[in-house]
Image (cartoon, rainbow, N blue to C red; front, side):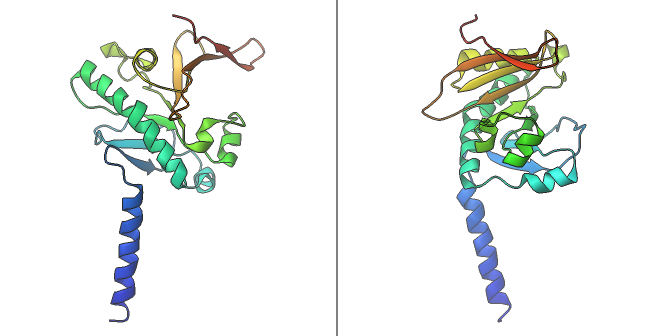
Length: 203
């Protein structure tokens, strides 16, 4: 009996913690996998797949998002990721996953990624995604998702990272009540330096 009571209390605490972070529209699932990571299909359409980094050491140091980070991530997911899933389903006729390659980062991991010192990833406000060319044969690319976000959704920053004429991946952030709708093109110059060009007013 002395063992059962503490065990029941422990279970109730765990359940209570889970409910605390639960959102009615979307949940966040953190999966530890190594690159290259296959596109996870099928997967529940209400689940966001977040891939941690390639090395075990980095996975350990990355740490779990804190409560405020999770709240920010869920807001960003509901405002941008869920509509993106709907857009893909409308075009393809069935549910698919859009692989998120980076979401929340702690400061150590952000430095490893050579992220900006004020990166919105540090607060769980931004995520990166990449279709990895999987739906190109159906006429859907990262550029199509970029256009959908630009024309249909609220966002703070939208960045196209490119090594050629085609986007290699997309960065997007959502900051509730403070969205600026800034758009940038990220590219490497002749010296191999990463540069950002403001294209907010480009059509």
